[in-house]
Length: 126
Image (cartoon, rainbow, N blue to C red; front, side):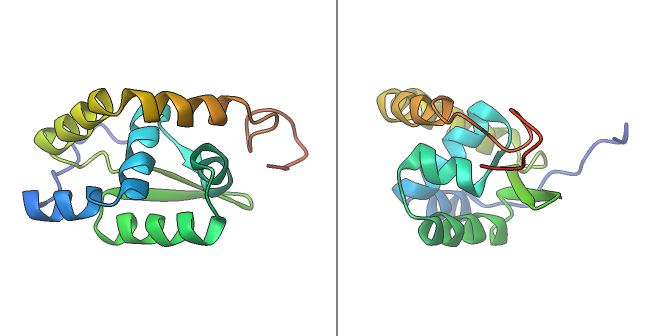
C-alpha cells in the first residue's frame, strides 16, 4: 500500500443520492461501511436476496465509483471506494444511524454464515 494520498473522487451529491436511493444499494453500502469488505455470497445471505439482484446492484455501485473490487482466488470482494469524499462517507455513516434496525438484522444474518470465504477454512466454500 502506498503512502501517497488517494485523490478524492469527483462525485456530485446527485450521483451519490441516485446510487443510494435504492434500498438494496443502500443496504450494501451500509454493510460494506460496517464490515470493510464482503463478497457477493456474503451480501446475498446478509440481505436475503438473490445473487443476480445483488450482482446487478454491485455493478451499478461500481460503475458510479462508489465501490471497488478485488479478486482473491475465485472470490471477488467489494469495498467502499477509499477515494470517496468525506461528505459522502458522512452521509453513508448517518444513513447507517437512521437504518440501525435494518443494518443490525442484515449484520446478524451475515454473522450467522458458518463459513465465509477467506475467513473460516481452506475449502473455499461460501
